[in-house]
Length: 186
Length: 181
Image 1: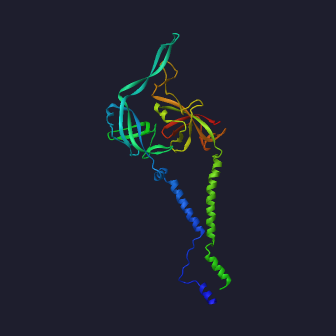
Image 2 (image 1 turned 180 degrees about the horizontal axis):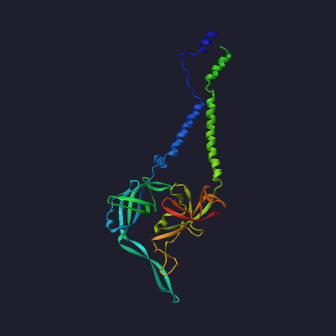
Image 3 (image 1 turned 90 degrees about the horizontal axis):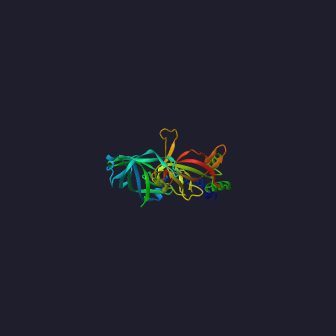
């Protein structure tokens, strides 16, 4: 009996001690997974994560006003022209309409003398728009597919499209800068 | 084989042997979890991020295109333009108003010839406008430091802040800060 026990008690020189998987190893694995997930969440762009999980693309139409455009250039921008962001060089859409019916104006200060109800002469001040004969305000309508995020609004290839945003634009035959003055979904 | 060696062998096979290194790892894990907890709680206490209250921040906007008014509404969230951190939420422009902005034609300042007096003259309608509005922000207030947005950033009347909502980008000038009653 002793010999059999002794036989059972002896470790075979050919058998290697197997690594035991204990609860500390399990904790470390779970922790490593959590850390990896946290790093991905923290350091990856939020837009990337949102793009992977939920693409929210919407078709928009927006207007950009370019002011004080010389008469020689107003017909350089045409419908169907592609619009390029001058900073990021990404496509911002295509032109559907160009409105250059408004002349560029600056304001002249005027004094006006007039009589009031009791016959007294009073001075009133006004501003009178003076149109430049060869300068125009050009409103360009652009359509594009934009990414939408609640709160953040619309963006096209990381260029934010919102009223009041200044945009630097390249067209095939013209380059200029202006402000977004309107935006709608269609 | 002795009883002692049999018991030792049983223990060796049980898989619950804790070594000194395991103890160190457990202590480190507890320290990491505790550190994350205290980092956010102590920092909150030090920076005053706790006990934030709501304040009404009044502002004005100067010389914007008249159509911009159509894109600013009550309930719109306002964010810092650069960091995109939420600053506040737009409310009615005044106690009696229904809209987010009260607009007036923008003005241009002139000095008539022969006078030393500056005169403000309004732009024609449907050109440029000025506007006033209000938003609710969370922060703390003290006589020493004034209003601290989220308990950390000082905002005071006169500040010009670049902000954005979902549809608009604009600069606002803070004119007043008062607690929400």
